[in-house]
Image (tube, rainbow, N blue to C red; front, top):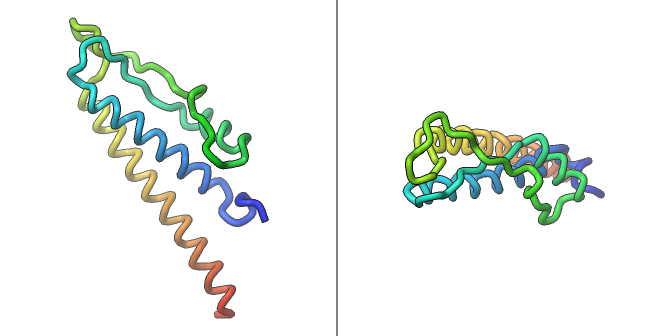
Length: 116
């Protein structure tokens, strides 16, 4: 039975949000690295790529985009710490929400298997 019938889009969304969390964490970690270019993930493009790959370890490389800073720094670094921290927090909330949907679905399945 494929994942899609049990968990819908939530399994793929969790994978994309997890990979986006890594990209945003990398941006934050390199906030003071001269010449570092901040990136972000286009969620819809990445989600489509993960779904088309059928799960597994699909790459989101095609969905990576460079961020355009509102105020570029003199050393060529495009990381704006406040923007990155906000995006990271929003992504963390979305990740937790997706986990909640998956936990609810797993609860339903286990209750059905127990006959409750």
